[in-house]
Length: 110
Figure 1 (tube, rainbow, N blue to C red):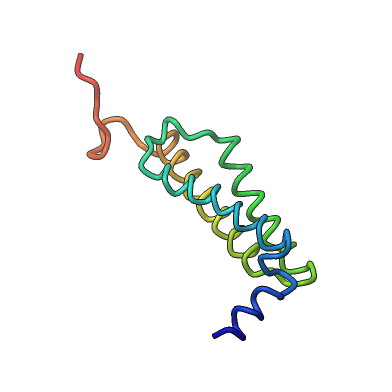
Figure 2 (tube, rainbow, N blue to C red):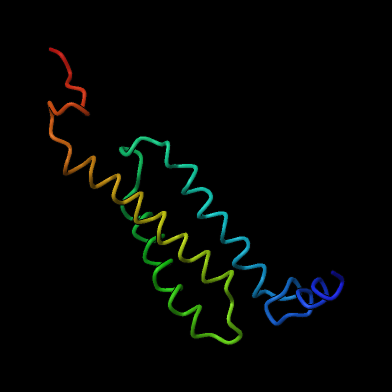
């Protein structure tokens, strides 16, 4: 067990480096996006979610190019892209695909 802890501690992307801490704190963005899944789609921001999804997509690719390979960085960026695309799909569905009077949509009574 001590060998595994020592190996993690001394790894090029281990806790002694920025390669560990930057992606670890970046998980906060994905966690915040997941917590916003219960938020009504009207409150979702197109520019914010496009930025989250695009950033996740772009940096997922580059996280596989840099040396040393940082799987934490790759995973957090995939999570960012996924949550951003999901939030965008909720917003697009609400803005463009919900038809007034459909069973899932409440119609205001005069």
